[in-house]
Each structure stands twice: as C-alpha cells, then as structure tokens.
Image (tube, rainbow, N blue to C red):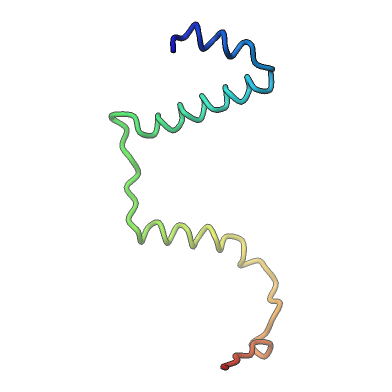
Length: 78
C-alpha cells in the first residue's frame, strides 16, 4: 500500500476512527522505538525484577492501619 492510498482511506473515516488510527501509529512508533537498532535494552535479572515488583506492590502499605491482630488469625487443618 502506498502512502497516498493510506491517506485517502484514513481521510474517509469518521474523526473518532482517525483518532484510533493515530493512537495505533503512536503505539507502533513507541514499540518499535524500544527495539530500534543501537538502543540498549534494559537488562534486568530475575531477582531485580522480583524486587522491583514486590516494592511496587507493597508501596504505601506501611501507612495502612492494622485491621487484624494475631488473635484474629486462626489456622484450620482439615
């Protein structure tokens, strides 16, 4: 497909569909930009990723009030 054909097709779409096309093109640019030649990829070890994930998951919980005490916890074995 040539660029002029693409422009003609997109110009016939309603405005909200044109915005979707633009959003998709932006997504493709960002995705391909991350994999561009010469770009150094982030090299995370599994341990670094797990540590970051846990830190993000627990972020802000230190300020949460304690809802339960040790007496509230009961372990059942069946």
